[in-house]
Image (tube, rainbow, N blue to C red):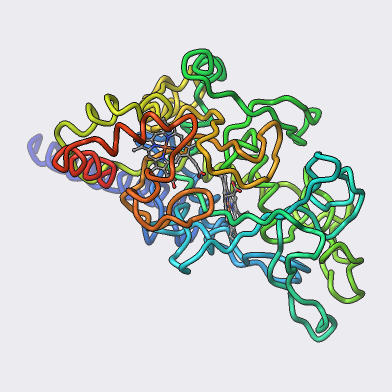
Length: 413
Ligand code: HEC
Ligand code: HEC
């Protein structure tokens, strides 16, 4: 009798156990079962050991990053891409631009009495030709048929192409303490860019620039707002003014979104910008493809590592996955003149200055330098002069065997 009692209890306990297990599984599943193409198809990888809250924000941001916008939602009137991922998707979401053969971004400007004028109506010439970045496409609607993408205006005497930069590991770059970067300037002669960041509270001048070819943007959030407006034509809290096509007023019927539900006339209330920023902050860096023995030593002895600093550390950070972590970026994030002058001024960066390009992820790319005009890593190296002249000469004097090792190393990153 007692034995049967025991048996029944065991069976009941087992059944209860299974029920609890099923229930918890169902709960966990229902928490993550919001359909997410990024999560379900593994289209992008978050930082290792990311906490669940940040992980959720990462995949939500990734889905936003992939979403194609329509004129109804604010796309245009002039724009370059319909989604962030249209330009940032190789080898996975957040990466480089799919191979279109050339850089498709064009920056323009001119000099007025020696001062750079981006032709945005606010520069020294006070002439508005649509600003320093062309939007090369226009929306096409039954109410808006006459609009065309922007072309280089006659007034622009400076024209520069811009290669797409990848976003892998961008949150780690953002988490490097400012002092780590500015201290480097005392050692290797580069200098920090200082820029205006319109994000509240309140907008600030003189902030350290970290992102973009000239380190012309301070934070990922700022870049997200900037790109949402300037690549896609979506106005948002920090970038509230629609781009004027070629500097001309927007024709009636070509800007649908502000007349819709949004009371302050903004096409994004800031939630889109925040989602992009979250995605980029938690996006994992690309891992090297293999190890190349002796590569890093040659990279250092040739002088490349003076600017392309192999590793920096993040500071203390509330997000554990960003807290005191090594960042293998191969950059000092400072401006240098290596002889690739494009005439464009951004923040303190002069025409001849560029941020030392981070080299992580090099193996997954086929176009190099700010203008995307080098199709091989070796060609990019041979374009180094001025501050990098000694390093280039050392590279040229390497034995064929050493050169092969160094190139294999770079091609493995
Ligand atoms: C039409 C192509 C295109 C689209 C669309 C686009 N980007 Fe980019 N992105 C670029 C190019 C080109 C650069 C390099 C710009 C520069 O420095 O001059 C860049 C650079 C960046 C950087 C700087 C990374 C670094 O460290 O240098 C960030 C961040 C970024 N984009 C985020 C976004 C986000 C977010 C969106 C969507 C709102 C977006 N981009 C849409 C082409 C594009
Ligand atoms: C004085 C600083 C400096 C030194 C030294 C230097 N570089 Fe660079 N490097 C830069 C800058 C700045 C850029 C970006 C220039 C541009 O796009 O116009 C760059 C770009 C590159 C690129 C292209 C990366 C990309 O994203 O397209 C490669 C590859 C590269 N460097 C490799 C090297 C190697 C190898 C050496 C040593 C032989 C070296 N660099 C030495 C500053 C330096």
